[in-house]
Image 1 (cartoon, rainbow, N blue to C red):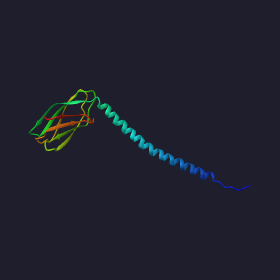
Image 2 (cartoon, rainbow, N blue to C red; image 1 turned 45 degrees about the vertical axis):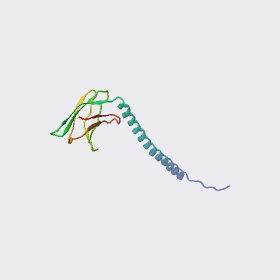
Image 3 (cartoon, rainbow, N blue to C red; image 1 turned 180 degrees about the horizontal axis):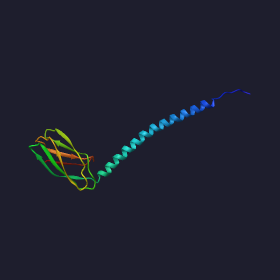
Image 4 (cartoon, rainbow, N blue to C red; image 1 turned 180 degrees about the vertical axis):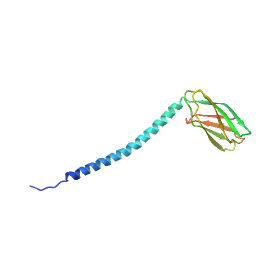
Length: 140
């Protein structure tokens, strides 16, 4: 009879555990990226869906020559609360300045915002929201 030697049970158990942990690590790394991608995709879809039912208008706009600021009144006439407003002041020579307008504009509300430090001679003001396709322009 031949005398054959195999791998000891302890070594085979250690190798089995090492292979299992390696596979588990690779799966965890893949799952982390997959979940992040799916979460970002879902978040983007939520904003796009919400924005389909959003709209607003410039109710009023006035420039104060002594303080050099613009008071703009926005009206949210749809059923979605709007937030993250940014006002872009556009000048005839191509310069553009932007100001974040703090606060939210609830559904059905009219709210006043002030854009400070606006030198005279601007040609247009563009107001954008968190909705990528939603903006309003005025030349007050």
